[in-house]
Length: 556
Image 1 (cartoon, rainbow, N blue to C red):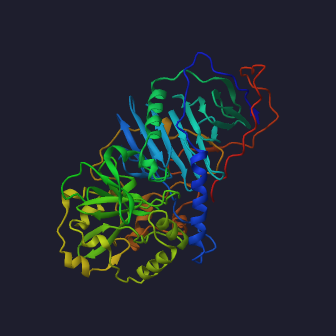
Image 2: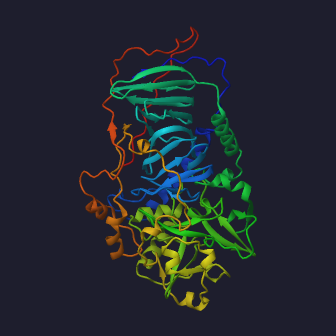
Image 3: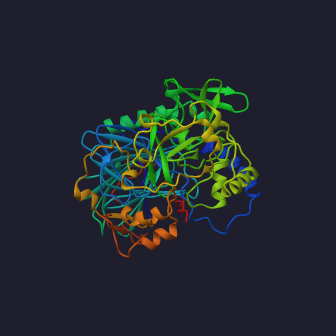
């Protein structure tokens, strides 16, 4: 393992980080452990829940210029939708003179112009990103012992070992990767060797089978660095972080779009501002099909991510308020926290209220059902188990929000399945019909190709072909590529409204197919007995950097 000596940075503006980490997370982790023990003691679990869907996703929350999106397993690029959840296999491209910002909980990813990014793996413990070209800045606010964060480029695999700020630049030809550790510590692996980079160091690496490298001090911040720093500073001042877990993706958008109030029964709730009269949750947006969750809600409002995938909604007085889950736990993402009701030819739904149980329609274990509920509302494991079992038997349950005026939204089958804007095509449903109808975990509607992206999504710039097919170097194993929708569609039609279980997807996969995915080269085991680096020598009074801890292993 090469560890480059640290040297103080001269003639360079300081880089500061918004990574406020260990202190504020210690109590959160302790409380989380207690809560987990409390509810797991009350349920008998299966031996393995490894096929549960991921508990987190990414979200594009801001774009300047043209930012394009390609769903996993597809080859059509469209303009990126701000609130669409992103998961393993999804790709983004920031075109010329464009920028984009994403979040995975408290972790932020920022793309500069002419940058291509793909999520090779995004699950409970692993964030593995392919950066084929361009510039990416990562602000990592917390790293648990079993977390793994890796950025794979045409030359190297970069493991992010500590909270901090990191910038990765890949030249247009894919020949050179530059890694700047603005704050934190990273491990570079490639060409059979590994290298440590410490805070304030910049490493430039070229070649593949054998790496050529040069290590210097980080450069002066450019416009992209300054923009990223300003975004971090704004997040560090977020008032909403006082009321929700920092792992709630999208919490940073709540400050400017509503206010927090303390109300009886629920405690601190968030009330959106500047919404039209008669506004209701899950009314302004559209449905898309995203596996492994299935039907997923995408809200129109720019702040519309956190309140629609975490927590619950309550009608208090004459307005809607969002009630977040316990602040001390890492919440589990849900595709839409609603109740579907059968209303003849139409499809209707309304938001779940506080302490009401969400029953997934997708493949998951009883343990997952517990987690997705107790981390998003104050409900006991016994209540979750009881409601889960009753819903499996299609027993009618009374929900608090079904009696609220304008709470029930209904559309035609065509509007739903074609991902059309809901608010423009709402149909009237008699309240008596809603009360008399059975609750269903998901509408029995099979997705079509048009269900994969919004109906009004417009074509967008594609990355150059060389970027899409460029091989990259990886250290962590990557999941197999997605099975194309055309191959999944007949099986989905046979069980409408429900995603395929993992074993069925594996049966549809043909051996050796690459589906237009870049070739992944796994770096060989690193050699520790290597020549000393060409880096600035340490000053006499400086101490030798200590060896970092090993990066967390991916969750399997």
